[in-house]
Amino acid sequence: MSNPLENISCIERGFHNVSQIISSLKQKGHGDNGVTLLAISKKVPVEMMRHLWSLGQKDFGENQVQEAMTKYHQLHDLKDIIWHFVGKLQSNKTRQISECFSWVHSIDRLKIAERLNEQRPDGLDPLNVCIQVNISDEQAKNGIQSDDVFSMSESIISLNNLHLRGLMVVPKNSDDKEEQRNTFKSMYGLFTMMQERYPYETIDTLSMGMSKDYIIAIEEGATMVRVGTALFGSR
Ligand SMILES: *Cc1c(COP(=O)(O)O)cnc(C)c1O
Image 1 (cartoon, rainbow, N blue to C red):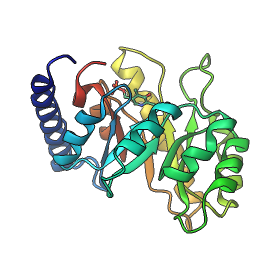
Image 2 (image 1 turned 90 degrees about the vertical axis):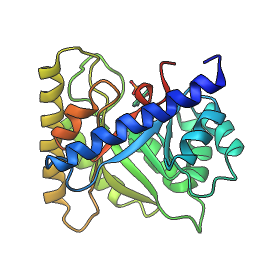
Image 3 (image 1 turned 45 degrees about the horizontal axis):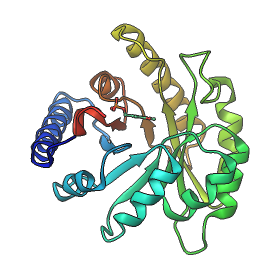
Image 4 (image 1 turned 180 degrees about the vertical axis):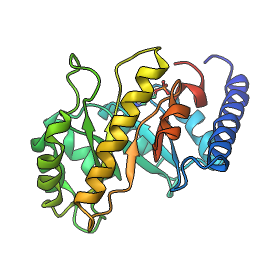
């Protein structure tokens, strides 16, 4: 990321490509309920984020609290930007996120959900949250087991300052496309069970797919894809 002009044309190309791919998938009947592109901007300078915003991108995701808060303040003049937190949250860092962000995708402990709920300021809309599921990677420390999704959902639904929106997954890093597809299929199955179980809740978000597998994720029912490298170039 040395030459700013090169970076800018790289972002324009990336944004154009990813947007084209998403709309052509829609034309083929995938993602009929809408697919939101979430730009994952970790380690990306705010000038590049500002440029992507000027092209029409509104949803931005970060995975580290300190970096997220610095950028939040630096981009505070962009009133319609929507901030998502997608990383691991420690309990002593929940307050800033709950005060400033609109979404948290990575809920995997009730204690974190409860703190976010308590710390959500009056006058703000409820914080949108997704439960992070560990469906493919027994070694990973993030995400809950699929068996625990419903008990966690019920606890979150009872918290007034949180708005449960769905599920999120970060699959095991794999180059095996069929394995990724099967993980996404299982997630979609769990997501539709959740929608049937809570018909009065707005369960509309299945957050899955990153730069190298977002196409497969959309084919398998993702409603939100989290894309970094394919938009901004490699970090
Ligand atoms: C970094 C990250 C992404 C984006 O990854 P790319 O491969 O750069 O698209 C998506 N989700 C989470 C949780 C991340 O940490």
